[in-house]
Image 1 (tube, rainbow over the protein chains, first blue to last red):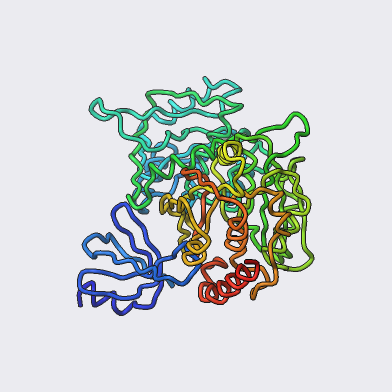
Image 2: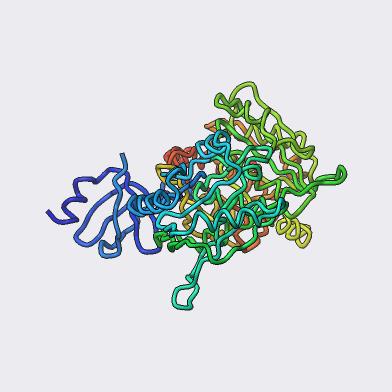
Length: 66
Length: 427
């Protein structure tokens, strides 16, 4: 099981992703080979898509929230 | 002697520091701070009975001879000294980079505890616990001295911070607030800006917001607090906190929760300022926000409302705030643009007379004025007057997963249809 396989088991969970110089929190929406797709908090009121793609090599670590 | 070891990135560095203290000062009391918990810290200081205490960073090393050298240094302190800062030795002639100003090594307990709100600021007063020592140092600086002493047998380790925290940018944004001085007003002045802070169960957040108003560089404001039927500790905080003892602050309350629009209308009814600025209870202002907005208002006499950019902070699950960055507002929004992409504009400062002409905030929308009341008022103002943007970050906005706006996104479509119909009827 590699990192992407492991992360797939947490789809739907709230996560925190820590990258170099950047922090992101939201719901893990999808995992592809080489990236995580996170539905991040958006400052806009309407339910627009706030999907953010984070490239796996840029990730220092991910915290799976309870 | 009481030694406090600040939290570090791992427990090993903290253990190392504690071990070096024990070797040099076996009868010392060592407290390791897992997090900078001000409540616990203040309790320890109140009961320690020690006139001074020492703050070390995790990873620091107390070297042989430290105890004797420290005792000698304490004897040299003047009564007006709050303690002292130990100058960090350079390594190979190069001074280690510091993103933050150095913290004092020795603190006078009496100085730290001698404030109206008692010692270090708790999480409800200062939502950045990692800065409680810096805040206290900066505040004490106004009435006490912090001499810098050299040559103590102490190795001070570089404090590592993960890059995602953007510590340099964070410090640049927070330092003016941490050092900010409450501006005293010699005599009653007519307010130009009425800052309105409506709150519902926001006792954990509101004091930081209030503090950001009290330290404004612009003096001609009033602050109207409206408690919209909270059932948490808000009432107790409002009645007892010394921060709120200011003639420029007025407190109003609803017996039950009526919603944001109703609370704003309550404030509008008694606002004395020519301009009315909304401040959410979980947000805060930059220290020069009112001054800059007031200048913008003077320069744009036809504007119906003035707005600026906002600095966004993401709230982590443990309440830690992480800087996201500056969100630039749209420069020339139209009514349709604002309704189609409803990004909150903050700060927003309305012309009070215009708000009254419009009859205040509407409460007959599908959600009783509890949602999107800011968009409602902005589009109604835009029907009559222009908005003017100041391209500067003047407002700090906390993005919380649990906030009302984050929890109700699916309702926006229904509200937008109502708002659009309302505007069409008027046409």
